[in-house]
Image 1: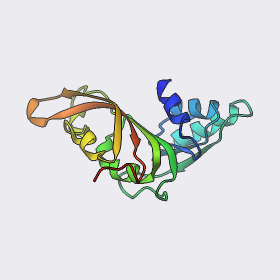
Image 2 (image 1 turned 90 degrees about the vertical axis):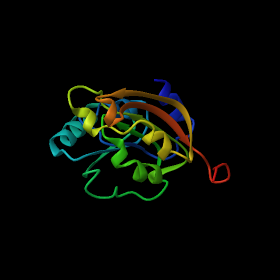
Image 3 (image 1 turned 60 degrees about the vertical axis):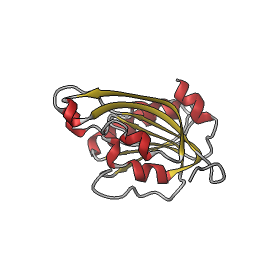
Length: 171
């Protein structure tokens, strides 16, 4: 849980888990005392998160679920709303700008795309696309692995980055 140790260093606002799926990460974060906004476009998955969250022991963080399509519409959050954002098993390149805007200065972004099995490489970012989009971030971990036909330049990405503060930001 090295990612959680990093998140804890800047935690004062909720953590965004988008998309949350059945809530594995949201539940793990809440069990450690973090308040989590869990977003997904599947109502059944969100109900599962709500039920599992209600079964957790008292004293843990809260989980608030929100049904939203991450791509069809802008994320409904103010700028700098989150201490950390997790975007796991999702084509992050479609929402990276919104995620960056929703993250507070000093906050953490963790990205892990799905693997490159079958033809899902068609939904993956291009090599270098995600690190390039994070110009205002310090990349702590950035692993990219090419998948699919070389002409597609698709990549599986695992990334942990911290958003620089306004004074520290490079132009």
